[in-house]
Length: 255
Image (cartoon, rainbow, N blue to C red; front, side, top):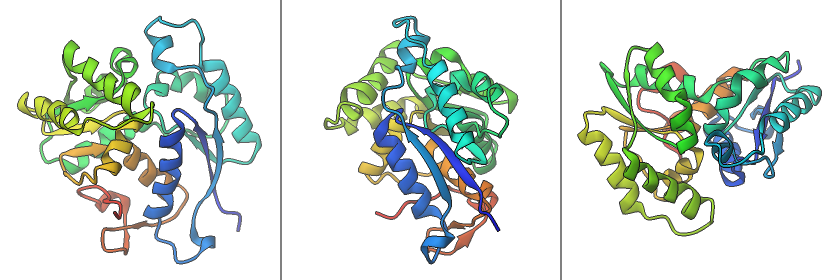
């Protein structure tokens, strides 16, 4: 039997791609090498910046590069493709049209997951790049589920971008007090949960061992969906198999 392989358009950013792969390995219920999933990865760090293009600050369109990467992954034998970058999902439909294998949408999966695990979800907060916010990917996904999407105000969004670009992407120390301030501001506006809608923020969650059930990590959701799409089982917090649909409060990675 030939095992399924996931194709990963990576490098956006490089650290979150490596963390995504590590997350998949840690979350898979496997007792030996051969029970893990197969991954075909293009850690393509030189893909033009997505947010800069979306906001009109750069004329370098990353779409053609990502389309070419998707085709290469398909040719290399990937059965489906994921992109561990929320902002890049502005280009999702165009990339999807360019290939004949399925793609998993991190934004759609995260919102659907939030609806499953948060009782009576009405209002969902989202921390993401300005590119993701302006492209309305999360707002549209929330509207499909009949819930309200809330993002920071202009000043708050500047703080989000500072954490993502000036701290995580720059390899510098993260202002964790600022991170928690942004989360609590959204909670004070009635959000029942806050999505980390940028994979650099997933790195913050890991580095500071954040285990709050009202903080939903989009990268964790994508990792879980990737594992089950490959026909594998997830480990629960005690290290045993746990179906994706039954992971009521999300996966807690080992420290």
